Image (cartoon, rainbow, N blue to C red; front, side):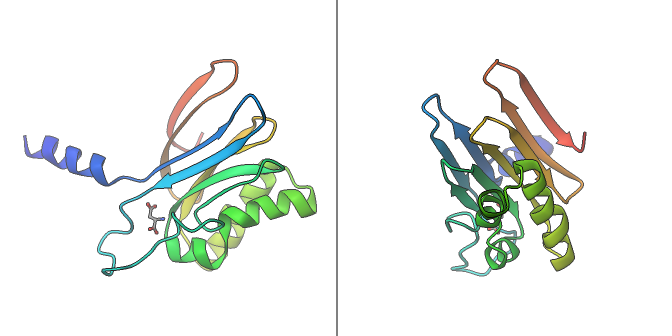
Length: 149
Ligand code: ASP
């Protein structure tokens, strides 16, 4: 019983991020969070800050982030992934790896992202042990994952 209650509690506080590409080529991203555990009263994390924890641009990608928000704000993570694609012509996969698994790791920022590009490629990059994640593609293929593949 106690464990069940604990699970319910965790359910309510978890981060929920989503990204989507519609049939007209519009990209969208959204992020909902309870913030960091034991956060200071009044703290604003990265999730509601466009360019930090959430970003979408029809010319590149949609990105939603989870993790230690201060780092995602400082490194403008969601915008940086988009910028690497736009200005350096990088693929979503390479841009996400550069930001999440190189820049953030060097800085000590833990977390991950889910993202989709304008062609429907899905990338879910994280530098932690696991990240609950899933997707459905345009052919109806679905996948739900926790740890690295
Ligand atoms: N990124 C969030 C914050 O720092 C925490 C999370 O939900 O992953 O507020």
